[in-house]
Image (cartoon, rainbow over all chains, first blue to last red; front, side, top):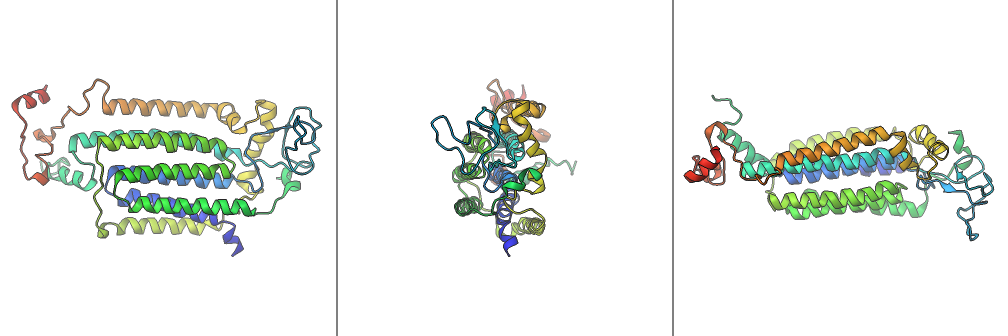
Length: 158
Length: 227
């Protein structure tokens, strides 16, 4: 039971992913389909980012060492002992002797690329929707298929 | 992995847990509302809300770079894109009869069950020693200070270690922009071009729902479409 509870984030994210996928499959409206695709995509981002989370960690931006964990004004930057370097301006890295932990930067990099590519695919999909609407005067998928059948666009009867 | 032997942490920190659960609950509510909703305006806005709530959760998950990209691009730019496409198209979606949703539901439930079955093999949430968190990501953290000499590891990987990938991403964006321009037209011809499949014209009045399958346009319009 405790094992399942330690993985609750994956369970919820899978539910979110499947909700987005269901919107893509079940709706006949092209714009609603694209909104569902967007939800699906954002949920995949959530899956990747939760994998890279380190408990008790902090964002992967290296902290500069300014002398035993205190900044210029003497405020402590971190709780606990820091014995890595004595204020030589180097960055504090995780490891024995420090209690600083960074979350995994690799999923963040992958998802940054994926977000931008996702907007590119979304804009192409929306442009196609606008063109379909100009020609068919509808963006409902079943009406479009009906018109293709009526006008013999599938070319079966010639 | 030995890097972290001294820095083991308990798996759960209560304030973070509360934050995670509230964000997840919000996301589930918004996603279900998108499925139920029929007004396209509402759907588009809720999709923006979904992106924004995920961006907030990304901050809590230490992914600050991802959070501001998602807030700017996911919640901002894509919402604007979808709104403008919605203005050029329809405002309402027609309901889908229940009988036609069972196929989609079956596929989604099966895929979800398969993924839930695999969840047992994932490492615990926040595990510092999980395979995903132990190897190459940690190498980037260890070497960025020396190699690139900037504090932000994500920027270092994105722009320097994996610079060619980012260049490829730029090519993707360029192609997408080119595709949109080709589809919508640069020279103001958008909307005037009419498809004439098998010599027939498809428009509002000739649509099957109108019961009229002949060309009802005036001769001038037809001549214009021919040229």
